Image 1 (tube, rainbow, N blue to C red):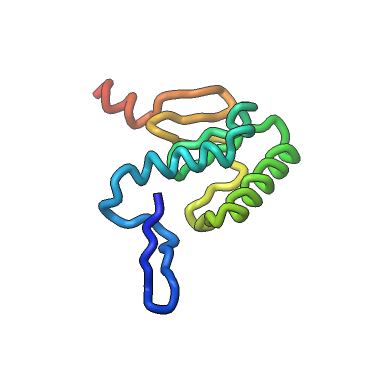
Image 2: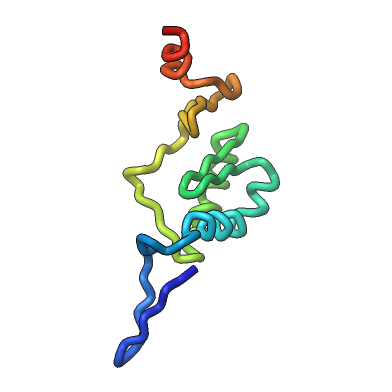
Length: 116
């Protein structure tokens, strides 16, 4: 969903979503799913709104997929903030769980909260 403003000389198309635009997260999710569909279907990538997780067996494979994702984002005028990214991590907290080489685990602080 895009908002465009007609101006006297030209038009203005914002590069970020406005507050109050209904369905913006769902629209963005659908768009990013379409852009990365084949990587998602192969099980190499998981996307949840503005989080893109890459899963590979080798570092070389990881680098190839990350380059492809960055190329597609650029091709679609989408950008990332490097300071918000985590690169080549083996373990990550995501949506209340920890994903790593040993599979999916509950975050330790959540387990401690239940036990105490």
